[in-house]
Amino acid sequence: MIEFVLDGRSRVATYMQLVVQVKQALRVGLLCSGDQLPKVREVAQQLAINPNTVLKAYRELVLEGLAEGRPGVGTFVTGSLAGPSLGSQAQLRDELVAWLERAEAAGMSADDIAALIETTIRGTRVPHELG
Image (cartoon, rainbow, N blue to C red; front, side, top):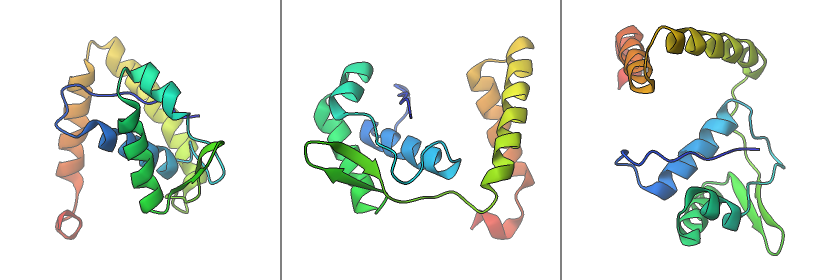
């Protein structure tokens, strides 16, 4: 089950933050086709946002072919973004969790970690990937 987290400092619209998080969960295999997304009311209460914001996010996922609404039941994942190497992602994720724990133990903040990751990604991409 996915648990949404909002970044109040982000310039990305709230509904789009939810869409991005679902896509990320699909990409790494945390959500699979057939999984039910959290109920609109539950997400709205948990995040203290308007239920219409959650509905907008779920409608966007439906439009993109990644989910479907079932009246009276909920919203379910229908698509996948997982790549062929999903099996190896589990090990990489475990290693990343261990690295994050070491970074936090070394005194790095979430912003420090994010900045390090972003600059490293930008610095290691070959030119044709940047376009």
